[in-house]
Length: 427
Image (cartoon, rainbow, N blue to C red; front, side, top):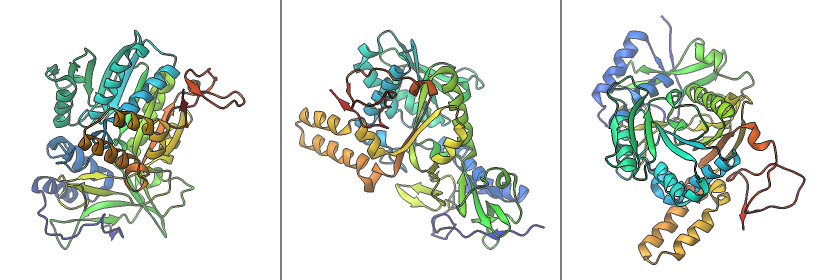
């Protein structure tokens, strides 16, 4: 019988008695699983808690907004989505203005970001010309997909007849733009695509590893032997397949979180972008290979113990952008990460705010605009906690093109800068 050593983890990561009654169905499911097969990886724990088809957090709940467990940037201000819409158009133009543009969003939340982006497309229809635009949403939550459909298409959507169809819901916006829903990225058709992933990668399952005197060992979730209805972290006594394959040989940290699923998705995005053109823009909590233990829960906008009442709270871990860059493996150009503050300021958020304020006489709306701007850009709030990261085809940066409408200092020939990752001044 293997002996398991209790893991040393932060207070926010360990199980602690706080008087909260566990959600019986998910907890029972997990304890039965552990009794049958032994301790489970943190990745398996996250996958079950968040996306289990019966009791998963994302499957059952509408967790966004003031009444949910967290609020995202698109929910805070329309300016955020508008600037991302401008970025998408900029990269479509940088890609040679192809006749078809697929906007693909991974984990679209309520559909607020897509809605703001499509409004920009409508306002700048003359820029798009005859290009055919379609929206493709990758969403596993039935609850959220219905909410997205309501927000984006009103009553103009319907579910597929068979469960195994790649497109499980279809609709169109009030302007006639087609919208399709998929359960996985693989089902989205090939073609020039701009991929958006806002607060998507942070919710993907992670493996956790601890350096020991005997080498790297995986952190697992087990039943607390002293309290059978409570879970605890343990460290495996011997290597696992994951600890043997996912930790880099030159890793210097003592504790590492690796999102293998995120790595696979990055590889898919890189392959599609290199073959079909386009770009990917990823915005998330994250770091560039420096942080260690970031696994945490959120419930009612407050930090929540990840092992208490599983299924009742959102689970998240900061994105390791250095890992995503490594997984892209040179097939594409990787830009960033840059802070959200830097990205939005480079995109012209200050100018956009001034325009909105000039056209707004209502004091409460003006106050809301200023407050939203502060939330998005203040370093102490979202400004430096969130980062932007982009994947682009090598062809995008290989040849300089004469910029239109941009003032740039004269230097030796260089490719046209990518919006958001370079400071641009508009004439």
